Length: 349
Image (cartoon, rainbow, N blue to C red; front, side, top):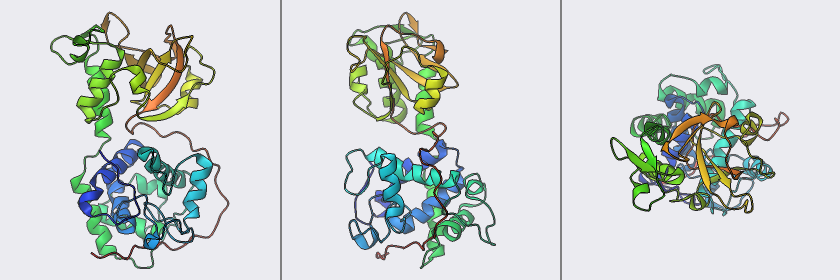
């Protein structure tokens, strides 16, 4: 999956990876397929699903619209992104973090009832929208009227867009859960090995081979079609750093699990005591105080995260795909302000 972030209008064929990533992220945060299709129908009309788009292609025009839903003025998003450590504008060095910031802003708006104003035609909350099973066309109109409030509605296009994305994406956070289920499918079936050839035979039947890192490497490769690295140090150079353990405690306690914002499918790394910047072991976090991983002997095994110990120190949590429950937002709710009309790019159809 290749995310496109640029200040250009995208053709629909170019939008698919962005749309799938957005869908996976929102589904992973509890939205219904119908609600996701409704917002995607509007995003296509607002920004051609391009998180780097500026109104009229005027780069860094802070008084105009910006981003997936064309926040207007652009500072509505950029100021929030700065406070919360998300890149914007020309900083596309971490594409997933760039897009995540805009999606987290939307989730923040849902939590704090921002930007959404219920109308007589759609008298329900933003939260209710995310949980709705109404038709994608209905929800596309609801999002347009209660959230976007555009100067040029082009409602039928938004409805048609919503139907298209409803029917042409995979839903359910499927890629991440596929990876998790692949790891779980090997529980008690594999022999631990660090042999260069054997450690790649994770999915041999009835019995395979793996070590801690090859189990994750091959599961993400088979389940999601992505490369996260073949050993722990390599894997720590991929994905998104979710949380770093500054004190290098030994155990991933319940308090630490909550503090870290770890989600199902994240990888947790340990390093040697004398070199906390490197890594020697990895486990997959399942949520509900559980790990799954292959440390020795016959495995992998499911274990209690808050009771698990390793000879190394707990280093960090990394994320390679979206899913699970969202972390709490860092910002407090803002004061009530003025809601501005959204802009629609005047591109050729």
